[in-house]
Image (cartoon, rainbow, N blue to C red; front, top):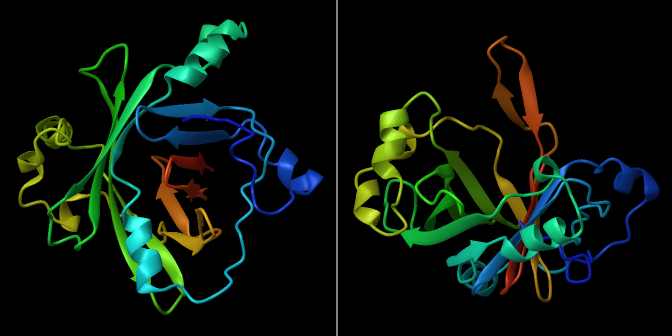
Length: 232
């Protein structure tokens, strides 16, 4: 959602090879409190993850869960792309993202609902996700367990859209209601002012209609004011 390269300098220098490999991949940075989402299709920074220094703590986890809830948009970046003369189909369209903590015991105590909406057609829901946050003592990481809405259940999607305004729409939901995503957890290290995370390489696979596997490698970076992520 929002790419601001000055703000998003990563903690490790990137090699030319790793930078080049991210060309034309979609990177998003979301800024909190009236909050900008920025997208780029040609970011050349690599998502280097800061190496973990000390073991993650309960205090780290409390700080981690405190920064997710919020409203976001990508208006600043969308306008900048338009003013730069990018073609309509080559720039990111205005988008809202709403993240809310929700009470769904079947998922876990730190569960967050995320809903993306088209800012030009606010009734149009682009994406829904459930994020379940955990302190993983075995991995010594902060973990985001990702749940996505099943694509083959449009009625279920319609019934739950808008849950950021009315969480009762999610009442009774369990992980069984979601599309299965084994191996798609995102593991975060703790930095001084940020949390940097990634899925394990070659762990998150999506089936396709022709029964081939497509592997995803999503990476995220989170601060008190911004949330950035790369869908790979």
